[in-house]
Image 1 (cartoon, helix red, strand yellow):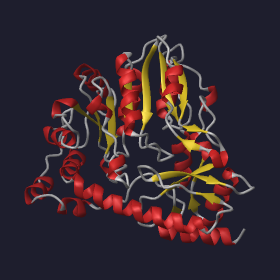
Image 2 (tube, one colour):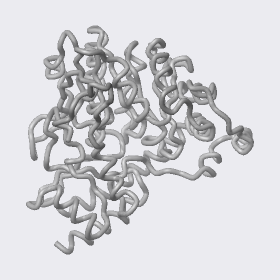
Image 3 (cartoon, helix red, strand yellow):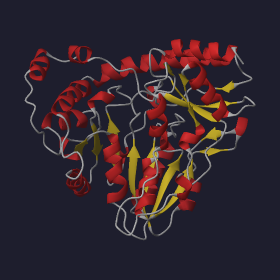
Image 4 (cartoon, helix red, strand yellow):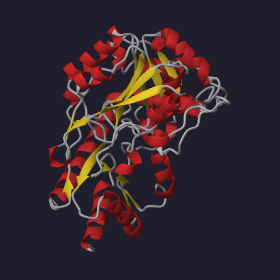
Length: 393
C-alpha cells in the first residue's frame, strides 16, 4: 500500500497505511511454532539481567518507586546511554518509549511543506510512510546494485548525491540494515555524514542493531559521534535483546533538536516506565557483557543457517550479515518467495518474512528475498522444522 499512500488530509490527520511488517506479525508472531525471522537478539529474564548488576542495583529495583519519570529520562538512564557513545554526555540524550516513538517524531518534526526527504530502501516502514503522510516529497536510496545472483548490497554516494535537491532537509538511514544486515565501510559512512552536514541536511540514523557485528571492526561510529546535527536513534530491543523494557532514545549534539523532540513526546508517551529505565541502566552499564553474549548467539545462529542452507544450493543463497541479527536470503525456488513463506507458516508453523513486507513506494525491493533471523538460541530447532517442511516438497 506504500505506493499509493495519500498525504496528510485537509484536517491535518496523518493518513498512514497499514504497517506491513506489524500486520504480518500480528497474524503469525505468537501463533507460529517456529519463529525463524525474529529481528531481536536472544532476550533474558529480569533475574539474569540483575545478576549482571550490583547488590545496590538489585535493592534499588526491588524498592523502586513506581511514579512518573522525567520526560527526558532519569539521570541514571541518560548517563548509562551516554556511556556507550564516544564523547557524548547525558545532556546529549533524550529517552523514548522505544525506537518507534523516536522515529515517529524525528521523521516529522524537522520537515516543512515543500521540503524533500531521502530514505534508504529497504527500510523500516515508518521512516518512509510518515514523511510521505506529512505531504513532503520523498525519494528512495536503493542499497543494492545488480539483481539475482549478481546483487550486491552497497551504499552508492554518487547515487545519493544525485538524489539531493536544494530543498532536501532530512535523510534517514539504517545501519546495520534491517532486513539486509548490510553495513557500509567506514569511509563511505564518514563521507555520507560529511555531505549531509556540509549541505545542512539532518541525518536520522536508525542504529538499533549497532553493537552485535560479528566482526567488531565493522561497528561504525554513531552518526551523533561524527555529525553535529545528526540524530542517532537506538533502543534496548534489538542488539541488546531486551524489547520488553520498551526503552529507546535519541542521541544528538544538537540540543535544540532534542528539546523539540522532548516537547513532542509530551503528546505521546510523556515518560518511560520506571522499571524499564532502571533495568535498561543495568544493561547499558554492562553493555560489554550483554553484547558479547548476544554476539555469541548470533554467531551460532549464523553457523547453523550457513550449514543447513548450504545443503540446499538449489533453493537458498545465504550471506552472513555484516551486522545485526537478520539477513535477506535469496530464494531460488520456482514457486516464488511469497508462496514459499506462506506454505512454510501455514503448513508447518515456520515463520519467515517475504520481501512483500518490505515493499516500498520509492524503489522495488528485490523480489527473490525473505528475511531470516539468526539472533535466537532456537534457530537450530527452527531450522529442523524448516527442513522437515522442505522434505515434503
